Image 1: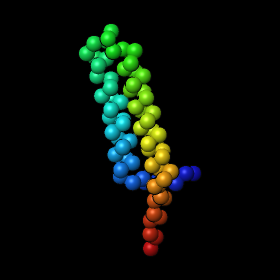
Image 2 (image 1 turned 180 degrees about the vertical axis):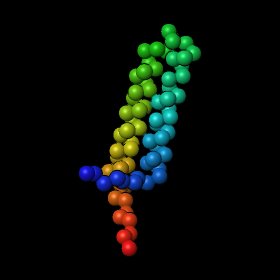
Image 3 (image 1 turned 45 degrees about the vertical axis):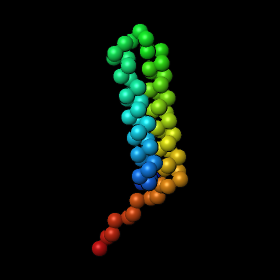
Amino acid sequence: MEIPRRIKKQWQIGSIVFLSLGVLALIPAFINRQAFWPWVPFTSVALWIISGIVYEIGRQLTGKPLREPRIR
């Protein structure tokens, strides 16, 4: 079983920013589908993949195991 890990805040924030940008990239599809449709899914998925990469790199570089709870 893998130990849950915490990563530093700047890596979490970077991941959240790219994830949010991926969601915002879908907005043009709702405004004008014909003009933006070929690029909207590609851009959105690309940003979500970048988000996952940023999170994994942050986890590899700064991740540390959670502390064990004290047993009295």
